[in-house]
Image (cartoon, rainbow, N blue to C red; front, side, top):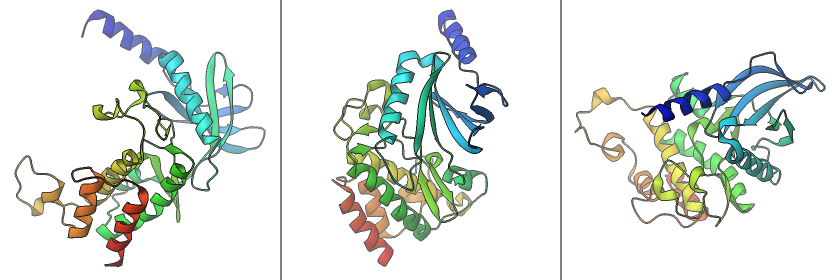
Length: 269
C-alpha cells in the first residue's frame, strides 16, 4: 500500500467515525446505539424525543460524498413507494450539518445471521424451505412494485416472533435498470448487467445454503478440500435441483412463479 492510499484510508476512517451515544441529531433524535456501518451509510438506533418512539437513522457515509448521498436518496425514494407490513417504513429524511439522513421504523427482533452465529440456531431442510416460502412473499411484493432488492442476505432478514422482515434497501434498483458499477454486488458479473428477478433468486439460493449449513457437522464427513455444498449437505434430490437453478448452475428460474412452484412441490413431499 502506498502512502497516498494509507493516508486516504486514515482520513476516511476519521470522517466516517460514528457519533457518540447520547449525541443529538438536530434537537429531535438522540443516539442510543450505533448499529453498524456499511459500504455507503452509518446506521444508528435513536430515540425520537418528540414521540418517545425508537427509530433508525441512516446517515450517508461522509467519505463517499456524492455517491453516498445518491445511494441514500435512491433508498429513500424506493422505500417511499413500498407499503408492506414486513418492510420498514421510511418516515422522513433531512439534511443536517451538510449530511443526509433517513429516518425509518425500528424493526425489533433478531437477524437470521444472529440466530445462526450467536444463538446457534439450526435449520433443517424443511425449516429452511418453510422460512424461505414466507420470505419469498415479501420479495414477490417488491418485484410486483417494479424493484429488485439486490442484497437479500442473512443480516438483512429479521425474525420477530412469527413476523419476518426484509430490511436494507440501499442497493435496490428498478427492474431493468443498469446496476451502477460502484453499487453492484461483490460478484463482478453483476456489474455490467441490468437488475433482474434472477439476481434476487440467486441471493435466495445462497440464503438457503446459509440456513442449511447451520446444521452441518463437518466431523461426520471425510471430504476433499475443494468439495462443495452438493457433497457436504444432505438434501433431497428436489431441493438440490432447485438450488442448482437458484444458484444458476443449471438454467435459472425466469421468474418467482417457477421457483414457488418447485418450492411448494418440495414442501408437499
